[in-house]
Structure formats: C-alpha cells, structure tokens
Length: 437
Image 1 (cartoon, rainbow, N blue to C red):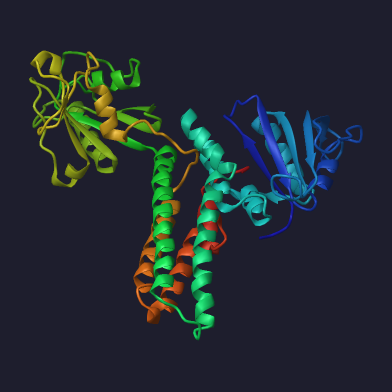
Image 2 (image 1 turned 120 degrees about the vertical axis):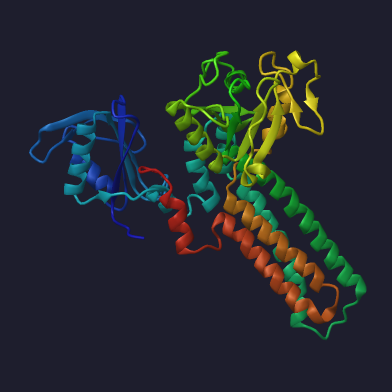
C-alpha cells in the first residue's frame, strides 16, 4: 500500500448543502496548509474557519478545516478534512488543487483500509463501517455500530484463544511424548473440544441473525389478478404504495417498497397479476417482468383468493414459495396455518403477523452485532475443523492430526478479524466501499 497523501470527496446528492474533502498521508497537513490562505491558522482537532484558495490566491470557497495529526486519527496517519459548500464545481476545484499540491485520488475504501493496516480497526470493524453506511433500519444501524465498537471481534478473539489453549495442551504433550497420557486426559480434552463446539454454534446463530440484519432480502408477491397483492403490499408497508382496485390488471409494473419486518430490512415487491392469457400487450409485459423478478427473489409469496386461484408455479421456484390464501374473512376460515398454507386477510390484517414471521422469523432478539456471509462461512469452517479434531482425540496415535485441525479452526476464526487473511480478500472487501471511506 502506497504511503502517499490521498484525497477524496465524501458528499451527498448533487445539490447537497455540505461537501467534504478528506486527506490522509504523511503530507496531509502540509497540503491542508497550502490549500488555505495565510490568514487561515488551524489548530489540531479544532474546527477552524478557512479560505481555500487557488495557487494565485483566488478564493475557491470558505469553510471549516479540521486537522488530525497521526496516529490519533481515523486512518492512523496525519489526516485532514475540509467541510465546504456542496457545489460539485467547488468540490472538484478543491480536489484539482489537492492534486496540484501532490495528493492523489483515493481508491474505494482506501481510508478504511489504511485504518485497518495501521491497526486502528480490525477487518470486521472495517466492514461494519460500510454496514453502518448501508443500514436501512434503526436496528441495522445499531447492530453495525456494535460491530464497529468491537463486540463481534472480541467474541471471535476469545473463541480463537480458547481453541489455542486446547491446541497448546495437545502440542505440549506431542513435544514430550514420553509423558504418560491416559483416557482421563483424552476425555478432558474432548470435553474442552465439545465446549468449543457449543460456543462456536452459539456465535454462528448470532452471526446468522446479524447477517439477516445486514443483508436483508427481497420478498416478491405473485398471484392471479384480484388476489389482493396490492392490498397486501399496502398492509405490510402501512401506507398506500399501490393502487387497489376491483378491476383486474390494475398493477401493470413492478412496485417495490423498502421496509423493516420484525427488525429485518426487506424489499417487498408487488407484481402484475399472472394469468394464462391476456390480449393487453402492456399487461403481458408486466407479467413477463413479474416472472423475471421471481428468478432473483429470496422469498416468493404466492397469493390466491376465492375468485383468484393460484398461478402455476415453475419447479425452480418451489423451494422459495410460500402459499398464502387471502380473504379468510370472506371465506369464513380462521387466520393461521394448515396443510395447504397460510390463511390471512390483507384487508382486515388477520394473520399478517404470522405471514411476517414465516418470511423473516420472529422479532430478532439481537445480541448486538452485524455480520456478513464470509463471517458465517468462517465460523462454519471453524466448526468443521473442531469437530474433526474431536474425532482424532479418540486415540493417542492421531493427536497430531487433532492439533492440526485445531490450528485450521484457529486460522478460520482469525480470518474474521483479519489476523489471517490474503491480499485478494482485502481487495474484494474494500473495493465495495464508497469513495471517501
């Protein structure tokens, strides 16, 4: 990683009131000093009113400057930040001036990568920065904040230490094999291994909940015309998102709504009614789009009612489909689940709590951290190796293999926080970050 000074814009929409230019690297404070006119004297960690000027002294903009001498900064290096008016022309002019003074444009996620490489954040905490930026609900933001504070990392580090402790006991005996070892010692080691399995299993369950919180998923509502799809979308969103009408084919296109169901971010999608034939080319296009959307949806609610039987479901959708029968109030059927599927009334709200639970699970009793798929995969790998080590602890002759499996488990846990990682993995993780982070 280059140690030169980098610069990046972090701003909102094109017409944002405030735009931010960040600098980091060994010459960051020198570049900041040259950007500002001579009347602008800044102090470390104090917001100072400054004028940012061209080389000839012409003022580009007036704003606030903050200087953060390293290592007490986000990146661990000398860093600076300019808070300016949000005009793209102003921000691009300041960036151009930064480049003239020797800075270069930052790559996506480079500030967070430098923070990781300088020991300011571990890898799970760095990922939590991106999760916090992308959070779509208060619960998701709180979970990401907890990971950023190191809650998940500390759990992983403690598990890795427990694995190392057991591995050290076995390897100590392997170094001095003349010492007697009996079934009692082997059983004690196996009990420690079984405790590790329980600890990893518990943390994996919590990480899966964190993954649901971070990643969310897409739920598609399909069904014949007049099944009540738009009414269901409006009921779950708790506002009028879609037009509701008794006229078949009212919904012609894909309608999506981002919401939180039991604390889980969900994109709920209403589609055109599916039926065997239609002479309306617009309705045909809507049905085609509905089928295309179903290919990538995480869950599919197949809604039907007395006057709208369910459409034919392709075999490749079946494992993602939840059969739901609407208008239970009209049919005189109690809301709930039976062998056919789930019975609800989108109009009255009966059974909607059961539908939400079927889709995303019960309200999350979240333990306080966000997670990603690679974290869950690493915990699964650790579980695999600890289980294999238990098998090798059954006899003295295979204890060397048990120690090796524990080493692999420790390595899997270390990959979560970045103790054991590769350049390719780092590139993949930080390339998904936005510019300026």
